[in-house]
Image 1 (cartoon, rainbow, N blue to C red):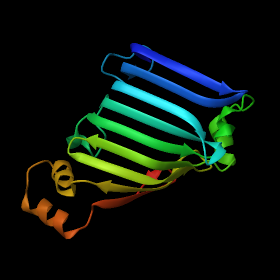
Image 2 (cartoon, one colour):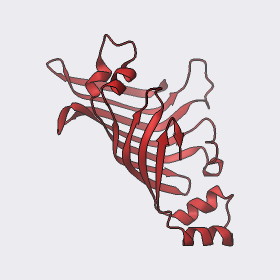
Image 3 (cartoon, rainbow, N blue to C red):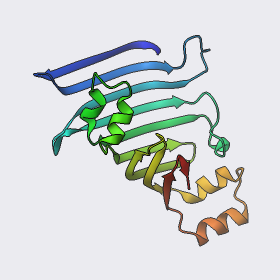
Image 4 (cartoon, helix red, strand yellow):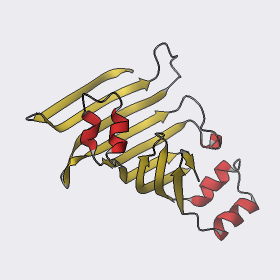
Length: 195
């Protein structure tokens, strides 16, 4: 990771996490030796982690990112571009203490075995013409593949469809957006595959 003035703070209550925060500007997350346009880049990024007041074994994770750049287009969504204006997430990780086991060689496997889930309570993204929010719960299966369901709400389904159809306001896209209520799309992952 590289960036300008990244800083982190950690507050403990006894030996338990009370709050962890990370804030930075001009950040790049990429393998060592990567070029300046490789990896995931953020103009600004703030990440805050704290125990969930509803259950101390769960963690709330808030992510606020702006000016997000992808190193390559996402297959099937190339027309949306490689830049996200905003990425805001509010996720509760259940059974999160399993992730902190110092003895576990694979904390994610321990978390999965404990029944841990990631519950998206807030998710907002602005990616080209796509303005979307999402709610839902995901987990890892026995092969560490993603499974679960997210309900995604699109603010302007017509603009989104037009963009992924190659731009323009062709009659077919307009008809499709009008005929189908795709303002809400349910994404289900099973065995690491979305459908």
